[in-house]
Image 1 (tube, rainbow, N blue to C red):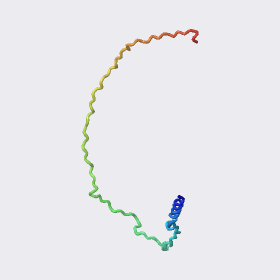
Image 2 (image 1 turned 30 degrees about the vertical axis):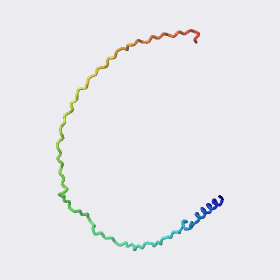
Image 3 (image 1 turned 90 degrees about the horizontal axis):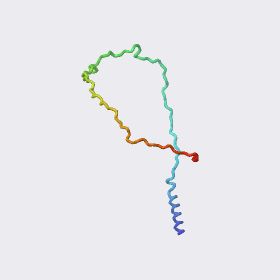
Image 4 (image 1 turned 60 degrees about the vertical axis):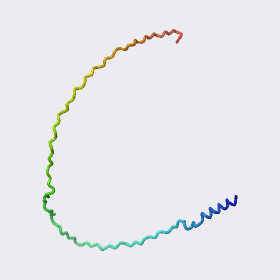
Length: 116
């Protein structure tokens, strides 16, 4: 029995270390990219000449034949009269009768001086 337990422990240890170096994470230091500064042309500060100096001129307005708008022709709304309602029914107050039972007769309690 001890032999089987010992063999199982060695098998687990051997399986754990088998090719573990191949699958271990490897760190590779990043390589910084080469950076070259951009090359710019020298600035020239000469006089700037604009061709469109003076007053602004816009083309003459011409109304398009496609943008003509005519007012829509609506029909007159139909004329409705006020609705005719029936008169509300007249209700009379209900007639109640006096109760058919007699009022109870109470007797005054009889107390004696001993009861206090």
